[in-house]
Image (cartoon, rainbow, N blue to C red; front, side, top):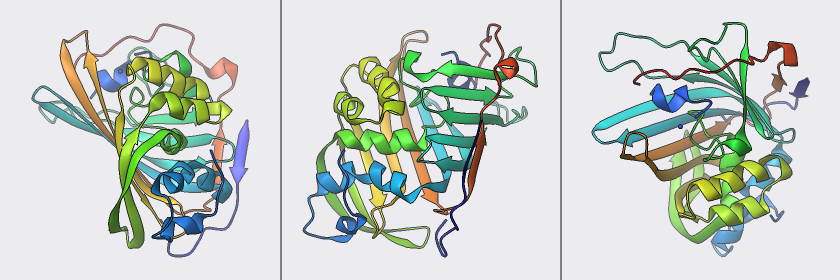
Amino acid sequence: MVVQNRRPARTGAAAVAAVGIMACAAGCGGGAEAGDLHADATHVVRQAADRLVREGSSEASTSMEMASGGTRVTIRGEGVYDYRAGLGKLTVRLPQDAAGAQEHRPITELLAPGALFMKNRGAGVPADKWVRVDTAALSDGNLVTGGATDPLAAAELLRGAREVTYAGESDIAGVRTRHYRGTVDLASAAEAASEGNKGALAAAAKGFGGSAVPFDVYLDEEGLIRKVRHRFSFADTQNRKDVDVASTTLLYGFGKSASVRLPHKKDIYAGKVAEKDGP
């Protein structure tokens, strides 16, 4: 399956089944309200996902910082996303091992409604095969497991925004933005989500036990997300540790052509995915 979005780029703009990643390391409205000092902050933030869908596509960079005990690792990703089709492609780079000597091959991730596909997953998976994960079957809805939060899912979380306040203007990569902060009610976000993300966010609402998720989002004058950061906390019962995760997504290059080809069934690995030891 190939999905393409070929709108001209805008000038001046820029954990387990997936198991190893953690171990290895509604309403519509105009964007003008984002620049209106008198606009309701909660409404402005909740409509951000719809604004992305209307825009069509963009480039994206992701950063996931995980802290557990005295260990802190960062996983980075970069790619493109077609918001109308709900499809994205990221190249995810894992951190080096503790000694800084071992290098991990980048993992290619394809993001699709209800599914995550990974290549170069390692741990016994043939190099030419993809691992497919049902995101609704993951306890975190793949908000954390894959090492990168799906950019559209990150925006759809804001549909459950609560206690939103305006925090002033900020410059994000040379673009003037309005900074909002608040918390996300995951159950509300799941109820208001698009069909493609509803199952995964409902799973996350259960997996995180109803905990509110703090966020910061930066919207440009057209209401487009330039940066969004969510902070997740959960208990790693296997290792008896509390884990704090900060997931940051930067969006830029709006209108850039996005082409995502999902793998054929014959190219998907059907065997067991082994866990790796250590980050």
